[in-house]
Image 1: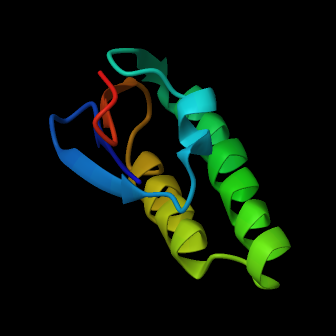
Image 2: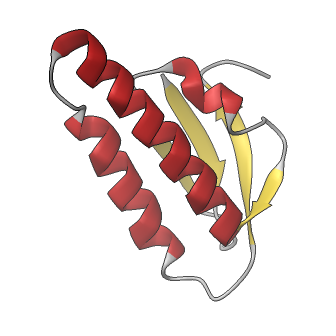
Length: 91
């Protein structure tokens, strides 16, 4: 699934997760403080990757790459919120 967020500077980022578990950690329309968003994303993407590992015997490198992208983007901001715009079509 993909999910789309908007950073404090207005830039949108489309993210990938191999599992719908992201929907258990993020809510469409909600604004999260950056640190909270990163933590929720870390939990969701780690859980998603663990599900891939349990099913296929290896972790999901795409989930790890998405998490790195989120962490890198978040590091550019001192404060602000991340707005969750879409969770793979969930509105």
